[in-house]
Length: 344
Ligand code: KG4
Image (cartoon, rainbow, N blue to C red; front, side, top):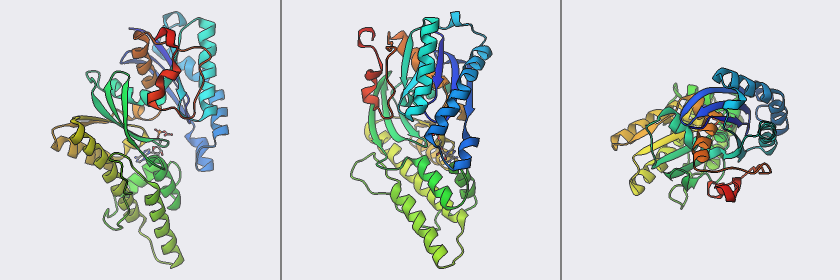
């Protein structure tokens, strides 16, 4: 099995890992959360500069913790899409430079494919087909993993990502950044049926929408302020969370039933959500299936999942050109744009 040095900088985590197939030899993550808390969200320029400052150190730590030398590394993997362009560029430039200096092949990895592969890190026996629900601050999508490297996008959010909706609602309730964990905590003490909220009706079977829900919460907050009425923030958090969890669970169940899948892997930062874990766990089990929630270290952005995806591509013969670009948006269907056709 190849030994891969992986780098991930698509958003606000500078991460590096050393991976052999589904085995993680080291995984180092340097989070920028303290910096972004000051502005209440990510300023892309600031995120890029932080990557520049920390990445070399993070890579050195990953190599040291894995007890490997450059001679042991078979390839260098880096996230090249999708994400914040400035952040992606930092990782890609460092990866290309290291590939050139140490004469190693380069593998550009799609961030979503990385999230899908986080499932293999927590469950080494897992084999496709399965569903992957990706729920993070920048993405919300349901993907059918039909085989290795074979993905079918079933549905996605038409507007806000679910984590983004959590962060915005938390800001309305003055709960700080990131808002997801704060709302999740507060929701445990509230009445989830206190406020009926919209679920966003869409024609497409598996798509989702969260901007109407977010606006409905804003209107409620504004109305209570304008009329000087007390607002039970725990009830509102619980009602918001219940609505989100119902929408996500509904889309997963639709796919499981109509397409005969029995396993769903939940990845991305929102997979930490207690309400989602409980509900999806129960309903999938009732149908004889299962929901896999990888450990949080592999759910949020990390380089181990990038290395795992790269291991698979490496043995299949994929290689990327040193002039491969970075892309703020790139669908999983266009994943081959990251590889050198002659070598795949
Ligand atoms: O995957 P991730 O770490 O990175 C980005 O997408 O940037 O996801 C971060 C998102 C944030 O929006 C955060 O509020 C949300 O995940 N999040 C949660 C919880 N923990 C983190 N949302 C709901 N409930 C949680 N417990």
